[in-house]
Length: 188
Image (cartoon, rainbow, N blue to C red; front, side):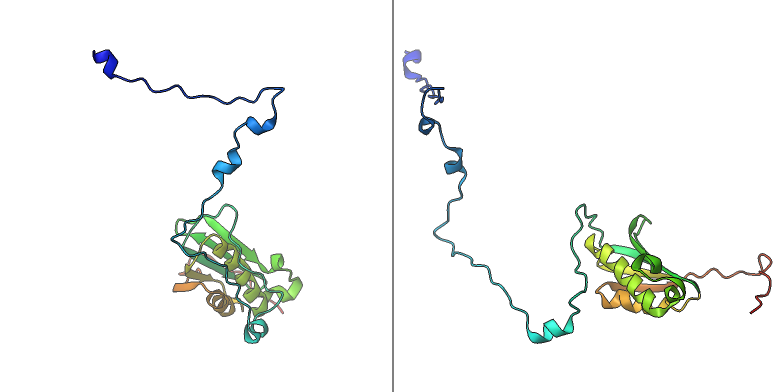
């Protein structure tokens, strides 16, 4: 009697498309995968904001936009090392452990010769390096400045202007404490 009370589930029927059969009898996966609209939720329409004249005139049309990197590292806090020499300016942005996120130099941006040592070149270098870092999710930066060059302040201002939050600024220029013999006197 116990066997009679237990009912076996009905076997599932498999639909197979045979070589001679028309394609209409095969199950359609596209109909099942289509999303069904929920009647209780309102339909969202995309809102396209048109820029105002002030926004269009305020921005440079040729300015590079910050685009999320393909393999973004998602580093929020980092260190910006600015090396400002008499001949060049280099900006390197790393995470807190020292792993490289983005870098740039005056030569890489397109300056040659004596124009590499200008404050304007340092500004362009800092913006280029900051865009690379912001593509990896950088928002806050600690600045370490090294060297006597003219691009020290302009590189810091450029990092701040592009949207990075500056937590601290340190001068890490190496200063000898009467260690080794100085270079020979420069003749001009």
